[in-house]
Image (cartoon, rainbow, N blue to C red; front, side, top):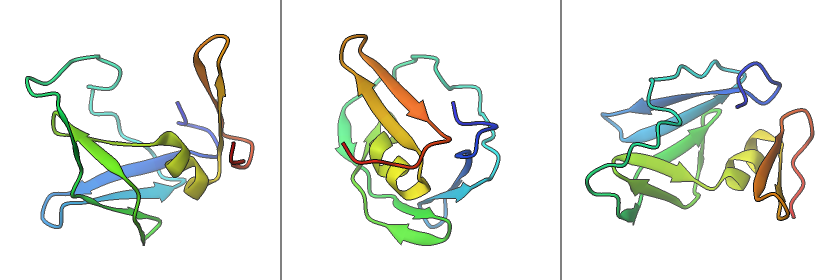
Amino acid sequence: MLMGSPAQFSVEYNNTTKAISLTSGGEYIPDGTEFTGKRAPDSSAVISPNAIYINGVRYFMKAYNIGGNNYFMLRDIASVLDFDVDWDPKTWNIIIEPDKPYTPD
């Protein structure tokens, strides 16, 4: 969703250190499983033990591991990478505005 926008970022996972790294301006490389809706055999949510680094700085934000994938609150990521996220309750849509600064709701 953010590829090619001012808010794009790359995502890397270091299996040795069990750390997730996001880098502003980096290119996200799809792995082909995005938006597939495929559910893992065990889809229970547990708190993720993985560290997250954004632009080399360690952040402590709650993440959940579901079926081997880590999920963060979009607003937590947006607040650090400075793009806006809104919710439209009438249409039940998330609105991502990569060209606007983050504003807490």
